[in-house]
Length: 338
Image (spheres, rainbow, N blue to C red):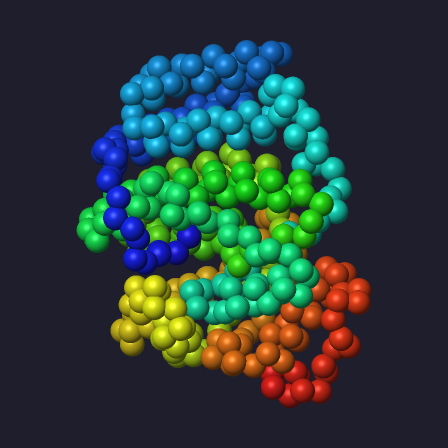
């Protein structure tokens, strides 16, 4: 997930040194990958023994509680992937069945109007906008926000693993629901855009990024795919930066994002340039349907007709129109878009 601003100060737990945690995580992922290639007839017993060995060899019982919970989360999702235990077997069966509710997510650079469009779509469909990134509950994110620049890369891997596990569990819950769920982001945004961006900017070193991707591939079969991922790109970087400046006037808590709007900052350009590649990856390797728009963030925020037209196309793509909205405003919306 992207950086957040203005965290509440809190007592910071004592965590493992960065290299030590990275090594424990890499060994855990490699151990589970090895197990998948060496199952016996009794998978349940195999997993129990492998888990106990990892906990003992890596001394996972004596690390900080918050770090220990990350490893426990990985073990639980691995058990679900293989249907180990009666509850996981039933849950896995349900996840693989056809589902009623639709999952809709958004992908795009910072400030491109993802939240603006998602909120309006949620109102149209009379559902609650889902926030899948509980950053305020992430203990590693809180450490990163103590205004010390050195803490950002030091705890980035742990912070992103927390988000990965939390968001997989959140999306599993949404997938099992009979209701439509809408989020202004997607777990796939973290996996395919933010993680790579952090690696490019030096906040994930290469080894950590490789371990993160190995974990994603390990859990990939149980990561729920949205029924539609709305992909947004800005028509120009200048409009994107100006949109961030304008948004901050209405949302002062996002002051930290102004660094992205500096004339000499290229981070938004890096994000924008990755969007087409990510969209292709989503369709080819994740089998996710996408709907792409090039927008002017300044216009999206001000013009309801543009938002109306985009959301109409989203609902049409998912066959959700029904009698929810009026006939499509062909004239005025297309005129403003063009």
